[in-house]
Image 1 (cartoon, rainbow, N blue to C red):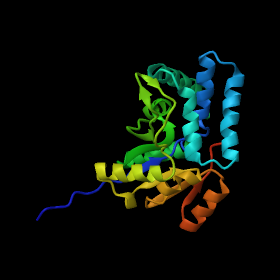
Image 2 (image 1 turned 135 degrees about the horizontal axis):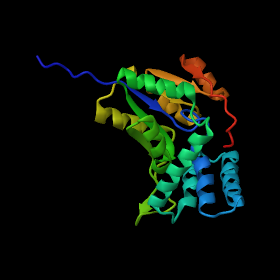
Image 3 (image 1 turned 120 degrees about the horizontal axis):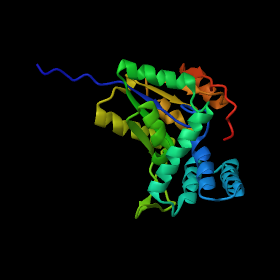
Image 4 (image 1 turned 45 degrees about the vertical axis):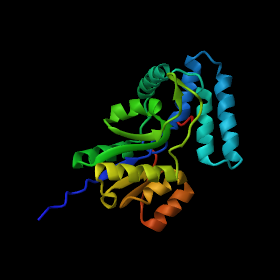
Length: 231
């Protein structure tokens, strides 16, 4: 009689506001613009533009697309190098990671779970974080590239239902058991991912997320106290 192969459990981690105490996409954008010689006002204007979209009720998928517009024309390799420099600077400053969540990540690895970062950010920004935490699987937004340069366009932001779809694809590819798996997130856009796994953890103090946690029996963990929350 053929024996059915045992399916592997996994742990899925949102990044900004979950694994990290800061919004790394914006911290890196500020660093990149300064490194490229732009005055601080360029970052402030860009941040205000995106914040105004959020305040006007524009869906997060659209603000995510709008974020990548500022990368139009930037060389992929140059951005990768800047991202590594940025991350090393963040490590030197301290307080970048949520200690509760990174401790959970290491415990999941010790148990043999597959570890995956699942983020609306992009690979350049996430790769140094993944290397530091020894995370092999990164599911993220993939901005368009032509001739080694970003076009400023993004087809599918990995936000909301796109995160759930990515988990389903990975589950089929890696023979995962979602009921035996865990997921971690801090924002309502993480809910489709959190609902898929047998265990879910809400990070932070978002009242809507805490309401969902109470209704579904999910754990709620705090952000690590830090003086670096200049997102």
